Image (tube, rainbow, N blue to C red):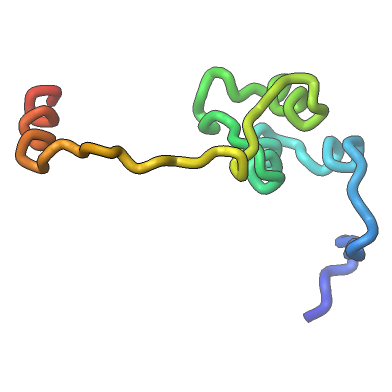
Length: 93
């Protein structure tokens, strides 16, 4: 399958510069998607923290942001019984 004429295909040895990415990302949703695909653990798109300035700073490594590969979710050693969990959820609702 051939790419469209306006798309440049990069080889394994080529990389995009920060300016190239900035030019390609026109909306906050594009910047958020880029950060997620780059492996950053950014806040949700509808979060007040998720601004163009913040996403640009993450991409430029001016602010710290966790990488998805660095986060390990551990299982709860003593999970509550389903009956107790259901009662807690019903009380909160």
